[in-house]
Length: 305
Image 1 (cartoon, rainbow, N blue to C red):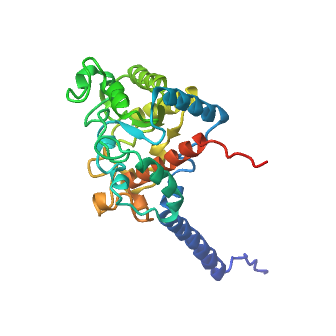
Image 2 (image 1 turned 180 degrees about the vertical axis):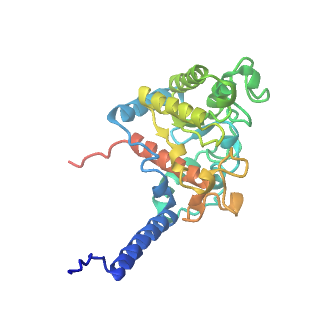
Image 3 (image 1 turned 45 degrees about the vertical axis):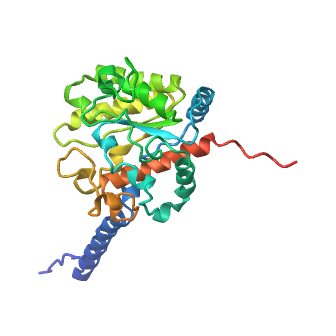
């Protein structure tokens, strides 16, 4: 009687392929650790279309006619923006650019003009405050009585006393708790319209995750992306840049961005380890956006005859 033998893969072959798979998995994990910012989001800074670049130049011309400073920016937002961990270290000289040394010229450019209590990076904005929603920046009731005129909104007040050419704007973390999407869209559009009318380039930003409100966060971030596209304005897509960070780039409260162990002393040290924290990522993305706008608005070099 003939016995049929069934072919079986070599045991060593199975082990070899298992090892290959394991090595691939380890490499993927290492790449995320070594280059955290690139791994988080393919494009947290969407490129400027021709329409966006043209609109930036138009707004800048309006600002120039109004006497706005081309080398001054301001900040508009809630506690995530008013926090000293956002850009203050740059203004205080406590930063290490590392591989982002190409950003030094734009930092130098925006450090040269004094802004009230310091410079663009560390000047406290009267249009940013803890607990604010977007409508707060539009309400005269929320204005600083010592610096703002009667009936003046915090936003208009900040633009009047600072005369910036650019404003980095982030609202939504508080809004999504009690504002409808239509109300939020209206408030944000009013902020954009006011900014452009006053010759200030508004730079939008998506908001970080909130574990218990992810559907609302996603909806509000979609509104922000649509508004940037519809108004031909730049946007920092902060939300997806945090996705692969520990605790999605959030601090212990699951609300505000996280920061490195060195806190404010290292929040602008752009090392691979520090770029695993939310505020460090936001600082780097904001500098990169500032540089892109600055480069876009620079006059074209004259051709030699």
